[in-house]
Length: 431
Image (spheres, rainbow, N blue to C red):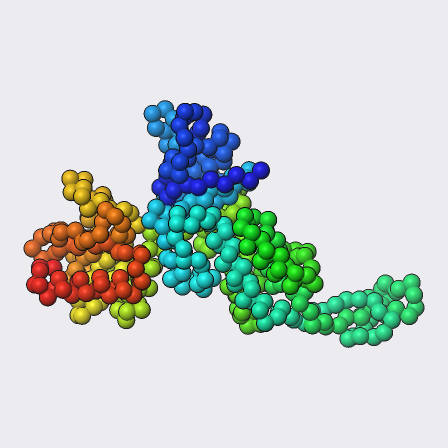
């Protein structure tokens, strides 16, 4: 039986048997022993050598004991994870905005994601993704089904195409007037259409939105003359990007591949995982901000790796430095790090929630890249609306900590950030 639970990013999973009087919430999700064990198996899985596995699962889940009880902490990944026992975790970002951020990624399959915020409309992530897949499929099929020539081997009373002489001699038909022939048929029964049909059937079975169910039935009717895949693996392989005939199909086929393979772009599977569509909010936020700078015509490099922490050890440099974003703007080098975390501007004694390790890291970036400015960017929210006061490392190096408002258009927020940095220089504030 399918069981879907909503979990907050950085939420914690517990056994319900450990807290029988406590109500389950997205921040503290209580699971049955069976469901908890399924997640625990992923969090503590080992590789073939019996040692701890160093995969995405390690960055995704942290298993520990707390006051004698087991717990599993989810990290900065959001999306959907489905297990073989029927458990599904619908993981949502604390700051919302996932569709808005995904739409700015280079991946074209995300371009039509619903921009509505999670929480404002309580749509399961599956239905947001399915809605997008249905839109892309409708677009792909709008001008008619793709067709291609497919070789048909049949036994007919006439010669059509070419005679299969060896088959005719080796396996003569019981009727003398039947001939073994091979011919090309221009048909819609091709791998791409079979994959879309199968993915639509999966979507129809999974969606709970009546409008999506209706759309699935309509699109399946369009594919009524297309057969079911005899080898889904082979058909999926034939639909990889690069076929010019299927150019208009590509966004829909990407979604279909993710649904049918049970694995999203660059993600992982496992023996007890059936579907995985998870996204690192750290990377998505970084790419979102970088996209804004590129559109503004700013020279920005993502994960720049031109400097080392140690210039020389035994004749070679060591420990490569990779700042999130490196800008060259108005003759200055600016190092920016994006952090997907909610700061509290009122909590000065707790350093506003800034990790000390991030400050060490920015200091190294500033010195090694000879940066004019250092900037930490966090999502804006009710408790963080204005830049914090300057952080002075020394007389020549300062750090700015600024909010980035995801409710505003990307171009406007980038323009505001660039204006703020320029104004700071004009006021002759040391940086």
